[in-house]
Image (tube, rainbow, N blue to C red):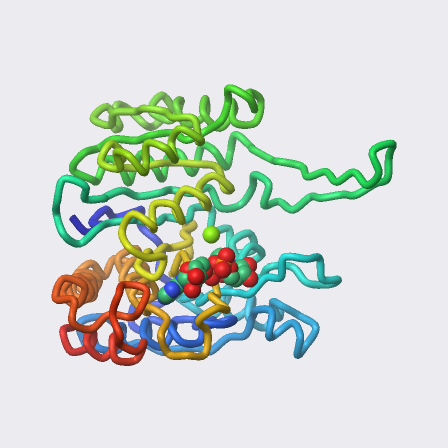
Length: 359
Ligand code: NAI
Ligand code: MG
């Protein structure tokens, strides 16, 4: 089953025109984002008039201008755009003075507190995967509060991990809401509170407490709740993926388990996401900038295209989202026009054409 759950109502800034900020950023971001744009355009008049606004961010932008996230980009998103699409950024693995990941910053600046990542296999079989990772998007180790000192052990590096009740509560509410709208209505809390009893303990307890919050009023009674330590969660994900429906996790675990889940459906190039807050949504494929294949027109555009569908669904355009998702599923099922990550020989642009034809 495709991802059908609505999240929550987002107040769209423009009902008549969908102004979509387009941030390809780096590497294959430049190759897959045009596919997302083409899919949205193929919907024609079944969604509001669209306007695409090209915006800069990324490591290439940093090397050129000294700024990975220009203030103009943030202001355009905050003041002008109804929603956005992000490609992928190439963040170096070493410290580069003055550089900080623009996607991590954007999630915080726009308060996009949930990263919702549906992972589904197209064919239905006993080993079919149909789950949603709901990743907390603003805190955990990604607050990037790191220091280095010199002590008796030589250099000592430390990172602060932040978990708050507020962020855990709102990601918990989002996760319960998503579970409630899916057939199986099953939520698994992923944590490691056997070791990190204070931070992960707070995450776990807060999420467990969501059904008893004032205003919940029995709303989540139909949702069954389980929990799993993150390490064995990965083990069980590989052995029995069908046990999972909605998985809610702190930022770092959510990042890791969603890439792991992507392996189960064949490729990172298939798995979409939205970064969602209460007033803004940004579609973004789960994958990174894939420097190993960038510039060759062989990146799989389907994750980016599916991310556009998720973004539209979040904005209330379910019919448009369905049409895009059906077209993508058909192309995968037919198996004739696929990029090399799925065993095919087709180019990125050819796959986009096939999807657009079917929309
Ligand atoms: P990656 O996701 O870019 O690539 C991992 C592997 O998957 C590579 O072999 C790549 O070729 C393949 N792959 C990814 N997307 C694909 C697609 N659409 N079609 C076909 N194959 C695809 O992860 P990696 O290599 O760890 O990171 C590369 C860069 O991306 C790093 O600089 C990292 O910081 C950045 N990154 C950015 C993210 C973002 O913008 N949200 C998320 C993850 C990584
Ligand atoms: Mg990741």
